Length: 90
Image (cartoon, rainbow, N blue to C red):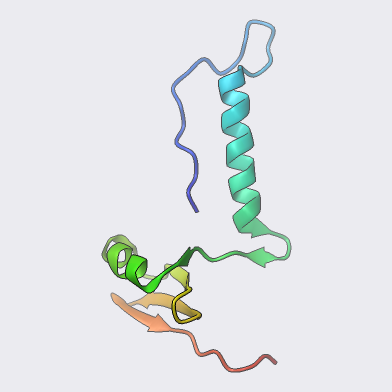
C-alpha cells in the first residue's frame, strides 16, 4: 500500500478549515486506505515475479503479496519466500 507522504505545510486556514493541500492529502490517504482495507477483507499488493524478486530483500517477515505472473499468494517466512497452497475453497 503506497501511503501518501505527509507534507509539512499549513494544516488549517485562519477560518479553521483545512487548507487545499491538506484536503488533498487526507483525500488521497483515505482513498488508499479504503482500497486496501475494508470490512470485506484486505487487498494484497499485486506484483509480478520480477518485481517481487526486486522488493523482497527489503521487506520484513510476514509480508504478503499476490504474485500475478503465476497467480500465487506469496509470504515471506523466516527470510524466505513461500507460496500459499491454492487448493479450491472450501
